Length: 405
Ligand SMILES: Nc1ncnc2c1ncn2[C@@H]1O[C@H](COP(=O)(O)OP(=O)(O)OP(=O)(O)O)[C@@H](O)[C@H]1O
Image (tube, rainbow, N blue to C red; front, side, top):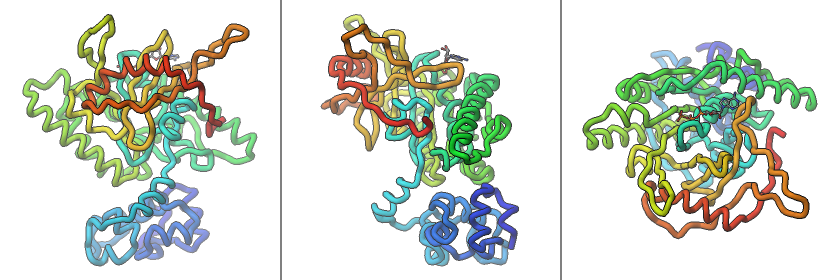
């Protein structure tokens, strides 16, 4: 038996548990996530995290309960644990409830968030591809900060793991981005009369940074991630910037490379699902050819890698502005959104000043559903053409109140 206060449980959740009469690991033993969530007035996700922390650290050897407890068992309470079942089926309704409780990670660009259905989704692998300098690292750092925005302020209230394969993470830049978010929350907290509890130091402390120098190190780290995530507690985001770097330069045998990449993709998908966190992969683009004056670009790592991420977004330049194009999503239609990289970090692109009597040219656009059923690389190769189509379609700007504004 251990006091809950000795486990890696956020203070706000500790408070809620204490008020509901849960003080030790024994108090929550045998309680399912649903019951705990209702009894303590915390979210289902927070209840799952508490149970994971309790089962990972608090159970003595004599308890007779296996240290490995499946997500399904945690959701269901004691029965599945007693039977030792690792996987049980869940209803679509249970999945729906779980998804609704997963707050996406905002990018701080309202238009990109809207395109993604609120932000970068938890529980899934999302890939951003783009040319050097388009802003992939900026976006990765922004997400690593934004994931920490407390739930009361519309955030995911978690921490981040940042895996840097290229050495492009610059801590001074992270300080700029984090300072801007903390200042934003300060202003909002002052207006709402609610404390947010973040500081520059706490934000930087909640980004676990790993620098990997080879694909061997990268694979080893990814294999260790489930344990690291459990150890750190409350991780809601893993960024790999970039996923391709060592695999493009260090591999001679392409067959072996494909098998290794498939294994890595499976591990990351499983981690995202089981730990309920967002995996964000930054990927480079390669030129696939030139036709009719257009350079056709495709994400690096080949066709089979196209299945690795559930959501894929292409970032590219469009008439001097940055554009994000959603071209693979299981739940949202294709779309595009402009974004900017400012001193403060990722932000909305300021609207054009239209000449008097004309309508603005720039805005968030929804694309027509494409009839193309080609492979992912083909889809990526067509993204430039689809973007041109989007410019023609010009469905007009869609407006949404950003959660942080
Ligand atoms: N402090 C800042 N203020 C404004 N813009 C900035 C600032 N820092 C970086 N940028 C912008 O971000 C760009 C670099 O973006 P980033 O490093 O994210 O590119 P990337 O897509 O990761 O490229 P690569 O593939 O080479 O790593 C710069 O060219 C600049 O336009």
